[in-house]
Length: 400
Image 1 (cartoon, rainbow, N blue to C red):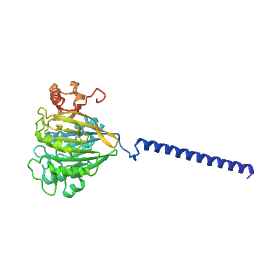
Image 2 (cartoon, rainbow, N blue to C red):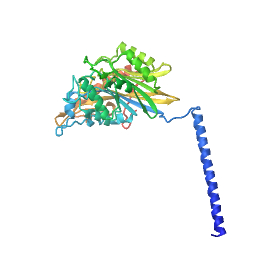
Image 3 (tube, helix red, strand yellow):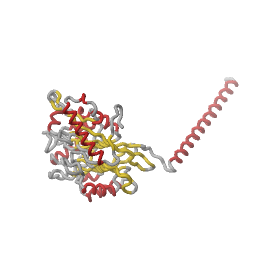
Image 4 (cartoon, one colour):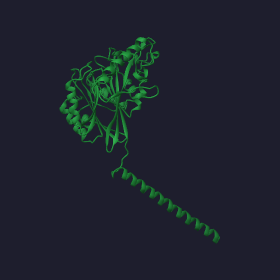
């Protein structure tokens, strides 16, 4: 090895070392600048990954009448297929970050049947999940239709399908450990609570539990939830008078009381018809609150006026400082379309605004006219009684 070779090697080593020092220092300087900017923009607070916005979709009564079960059965395999029921509404559901629905049937096993004591095939729950529904609430007046077996079957089937749920429990220990249901989405913590006014007079046998709408119990549960410091607290109530489009004073008083405890959203089901939705500004402690008294039917075989459809409600929260605050609220009208195909009644949930100007889609003019009547009745009610919550309208390419 010559002196020239040694010199070149030594010089190259020095150059590489100097470049490494410059690179590392530059990287460190950039890192320091980034941290200083971050610290300043956060007001000196340590930043944690969090979503700037979070959207919820709330869905009304998922029923399972006899005709729905017969429609879903494959006559050759005798398996049940419900996915087509949701194919037109799936894009609306999937758009939201979190979709929560009232599952108003049991998964109590055969014989599968509808009213008055519901037990649907597990395929119904699987199709709900496939359509984008993330969480189920199960405390409703049909929760005990199949007794202890039905309550346990519903819980175990939803667990096996990996569908989170709340409102009914296998025993007191399970309720104590799993309730209130706490979960996170995009760094935002949510508490979900669910209760029903009753179970149609059917006894709930020990050790299973159905959450009953008891003011003192709910007060204790809300305080337990608040001890976990959720960003958003949701109270899903099965309440009100069936087929009555006006909530009672008892309900409005309860809503005001629960808002005073720090609940952000009160979502109602049970009447099988629509009732008003109110977004109140600065109800307590400077916070907003929304109460939706009844969303009507999401899927059922009820065909009388005002029961053949419902509304799904979209509520958006936006981060303001360290809080998630309500920033937008609207609803989609939905209607259950039941044409006859190959001598069998089918069920499809339609987003009304997307189909209200396409009469050619419907197999009979009477079906189209029935949907138009539902839309007219729903708008007459909600446009006059809602406060700060408007209908979302389809403009041909997007929802506005």
